[in-house]
Length: 178
Length: 313
Ligand code: SF4
Ligand code: SF4
Image (tube, rainbow over all chains, first blue to last red; front, top):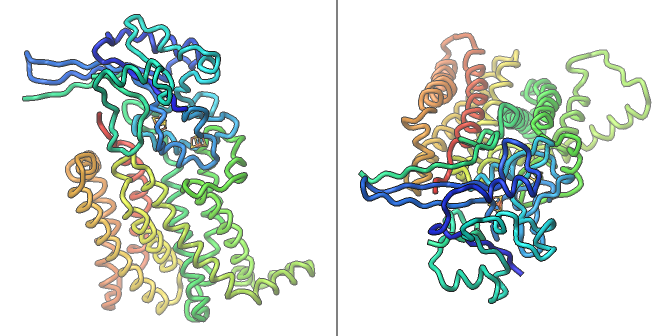
């Protein structure tokens, strides 16, 4: 089993509903976010191109955050989802410094927090992660890459995609449809 | 002109706009670890080579600093943790892949040894010291009988500690400035150099001072070579590494680095030490004090600049 997510940069309008849904579902402390929207504009005026991406932890297959964690609090859970066990985490910040995407943050309670793909609270109950389920443009796809009929497998077969800084060697599992 | 504008909706504390998760604690801890590693390395080395009487400061006096330095370093590390009450989790597992883990274990070997070493030499500071209890005298006799093996363990672990202070940073490929394997040897050399400087500062013996000034001069030479090598490596590498080097080559860290670390912390003390060796009489404490201050500033600059260096995507 290999959970992954695909985000359609052509459909995303940058409304940030996914951000609010995550903050609500996961009781993210005020002022923090586990997912966020990035807008990249490039080109020469008036030929400008804009790409909008809903980003979060990439649940990397070769994740530096799991590697550098001194206690094993950061670990691979079911389907390769990268999780933090709060009461094994000492809050040393090594994993925060190790993530090329800056996807982690120190929770005000001391441990380190980040996107969980809603593994325990939704996915294991057969639901999509909160961000995926609320997206008004339905631009996100979630599922198991080992299952050829999962939404994410199907869309990755049809569309061109990229991952973020694959040259960092992290083998990210968050795909952006381009 | 083609331009790229990136707007992010994320504003997490300690992460954005640039990472600043580590403040003064980690660089201070790395500096104290390196300095202690340097002092203990020389104490162990000159014990193994049987030169205790020739270099009494290095072998007997300077190591008294290390239990204090290491304890302060450990306290800084503890203060840096955000989930402090779970500190003990560091010591319920060893994770070889994680420098933070094996570094914490290395400290658990070196710190007690630094206390043992000081206890064995307690009469240097307090000539009338009395251990009071017989078992303490027995313990002392036991350690004294095994001083050579202990010195060997100390020698190896002090080197590991010194290298670790650099590897802690270099293991993070997310921060291009840190992601160079030169950082391990560089921080080790800097730690040995600050250790030699501390011995020069403490020594009342002219011949010993000159020996350690000579050792320090050599270490400064290696350090300069490694620093130049590091920047050459960055400039010949990928765009993110070039940008990391530029933090120090025209970027915001240029003046503090080249003025305080390179000039005042390495070049000036090297010249002063050369003059000293040529028998010019200058206040002997200036060079080692500059070396130690330079080593401290170097750790702070690397810690801050490293967090400012990143991949852009
Ligand atoms: S995106 Fe960052 S936090 Fe998530 S698995 Fe990769 S390295 Fe770890
Ligand atoms: S902050 Fe917590 S999860 Fe992160 S590396 Fe340290 S112990 Fe592991």
